Image (cartoon, rainbow, N blue to C red; front, side):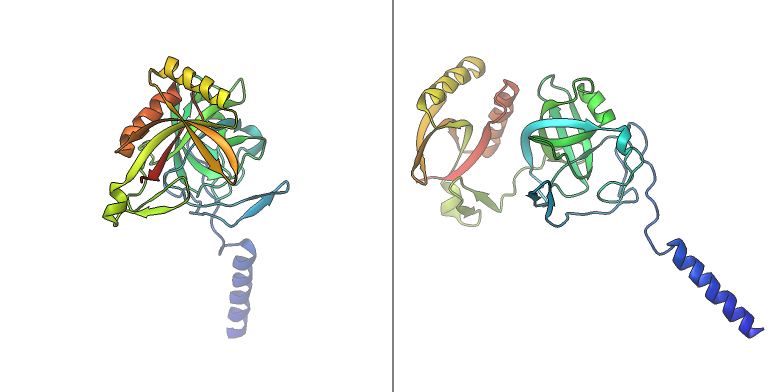
Amino acid sequence: MKKITLICLIIMLAACSSSGSYRRSPAPMPDDNRMPVGENGGFQKVGKPYKVAGKWYYPKDEPVYDTVGYASWYGKQFHGKATANGETFNMNALTAAHKTLAMPTFVKVTNLENGRMIVLRVNDRGPFVGDRIIDISRRGAQVLGFEKQGVTKVRVQASDQYGRIKKASPSYTIAESGTIAESGDKSASENLTHYVQVGSYGDINNAKQQARSVRKRVGKKPFIEKANASGRIFWRVRLGPFLERSTAERLLDKIVDRGFYEARVFTELGP
């Protein structure tokens, strides 16, 4: 009798092992028109460097990510399949794919062609086509108003699930030259200045043309600054300086809204 019981126990254990009961349970399908809640069956992941079509990508956690580029969308072909962090892709839920952001990361995405905005949950990798920076679920594309055209220019900002943007950490500031000013260094922090840079050009005539365009469309007069990098001369179109970075960021929002999508805030050490 004991022998029979032992054999039955061995058979039961083998069955459990073969059925994969020790593996993570399949992730539930996210609700339509919603962002996945919690881990939703997936897991938090930054990921190791990986290579696609001969190009290397380096995932990292970027809590103050803010980039302008092109968005596309994906849907039926991947509906119901596992995402890169183990969730289940629902083309009718509010999710997105990004090449390097940690998963999950919430992002505030603004369609710069019509002003529509949405908050999405990044839980997948991609897109790997041209200069596109984010791939959005079909439902996200519908809300942003570009489902039919397929591609649109967007601004992508890391946020919380409510679309609130996290400001840069006060512990340090990276200057354009690559030097770091620690906030604990009072003398350094007092010398920090902030600029909104609309663009950088190898031809001064192009810089002058852009400066005129900024003055006309934004109502602010930028200055043109000569710079040298590794022996190469270029011309930067800038506004500022500003003592508070928040002031520069408010102006940046206005400038991007006027169509200057490549504008950025630069923080540098003063003289």
